[in-house]
Image (cartoon, rainbow, N blue to C red; front, top):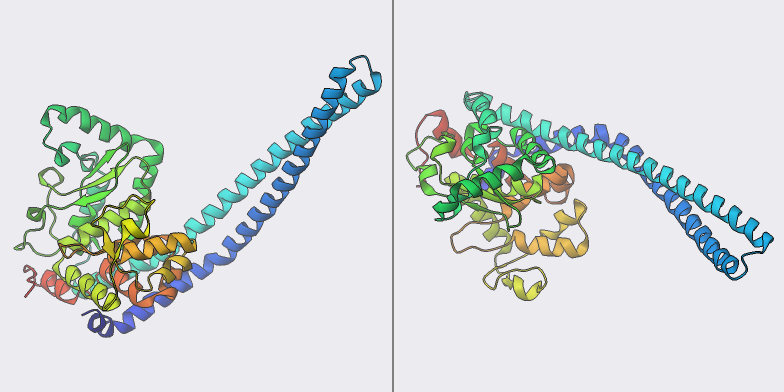
Length: 395
């Protein structure tokens, strides 16, 4: 299925990868310059800190000598000079740290600009798909409104039968969502999704209500009635009537928000479920499944979590993960569920958000699946059903 989908849309997928490479290349020189400035500032700060440490040691030794011989004028003079030098060095170190922080912020801004550039390339692909189908702008304004609506922050009562604490848990979710750091991650995820994901096809998944807790392992809970088989692809339901919810911790990043959104995309679109299942089967066929709790005993996996890593690792290394972390993430990308759900779209979405160009270069087959699904490009039957205003049928 995946091969057929890629072959059918090969020209468009190849062009998308080239467009993203060109978009990011424009900002690469700026990023590299900012990175060089950061590492130069970091080295300078390290040198100053090392010198300040030595002066502090010398100051402590003189202090001990002066304590033993408090009337020694020579020691007094040496101690006073050592104090001045030490204080000057600490002031210099503080100034160097500020320079390093500014350089790091500049580097991060350049990184964000490159991410935005590749996301804009994806947005152009989304618009091209919808223009071809004549379905552009039917959902986008409504999806944008729903994504930013306070009503999207769902009560945790959706996750529990404890109705007695309805108001308290809902208030906590709202309070967490209002925190500046959390609000920033929500904003970053929304901005990226509105560029990289097609709201005319995946609008329902993009606007799934979110519930926050202080500390919880993120997950997507999906209710089938939110994705009625008789609904036209892309149809939107109100936030107030949904049972599906994304459960997140206060510390979860924009990347995690997008990961859980991808779970909803997979469930709500039959063709996506078919493609992701086929992709996982084709990539891991014949591989022995690994029990995560035994392979990674310190990561908190349960005994029933297992999967096959294929060579997913190369994409994680290409996007900047360490060898050890890439090994864990590769296994998780090949995770098996009894329900038929997968992690290939979710983990691919994280890779696309982190560094779309590096992802595309390292594993074009996986990238084409993810970008083809999020933009809608390879969802031929779903697009046909939406264009004809009829429900999508699996058969």
